[in-house]
Image (cartoon, rainbow over the protein chains, first blue to last red):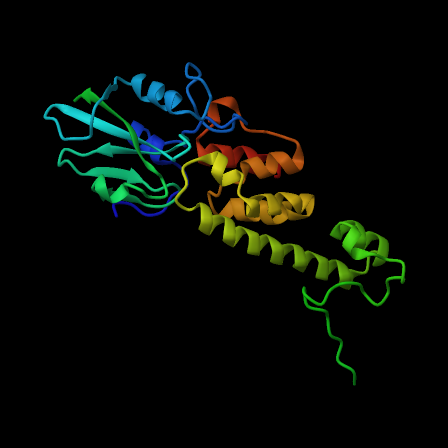
Length: 125
Length: 139
């Protein structure tokens, strides 16, 4: 555990690197989502979100020197649920919804309430 | 001396003052109180306590079952959250009181109940500022 519970930011914001707000493309328009990206709860929208800050899709979550990676999780129905960001150690950091931040292995998140990683993305550090 | 007793939530079906034609199951709780009980201070207090009980009950379920969710859609579509919305304006004092103490995501519920949205566009997603926008409205 790397932080206490807080409801002021979520996993998407944490992976994005902006813990000042809650990121989600809710149809009611109450929460933050960049205007340039479709406000749709789809994997593609989340990929576009991270692409907007320099990430590109990559094949896996293995540690690559000089790159930082994120993983976007989806449920079996394809609904995005979670994002995690890779640390320089190769472990991952996640904000668990309205709960705590944790450091974890990718394996520990597989088949979880968040589903499984559907897309990995990377950008040069 | 007879001790006055108040019915428990489970026992509460129809007060002694209600007519035989009152059918509480077919009425919403608030309407039922207006038709059958009037503005008795004691009954209003009991009604408020019932609302508070339901609010606390639903809130505890909602928070527990959405703790790990990042999806605002999941959080605000939870049945317990909608149970609070269904309490209507009578739940507002409890929602506002909770919002003052916590950063819980009451914004959708407040908008549904009040049909208002005081959140400034530039504050979207910033829970502290969204909270301030709502508390300013109720000041």
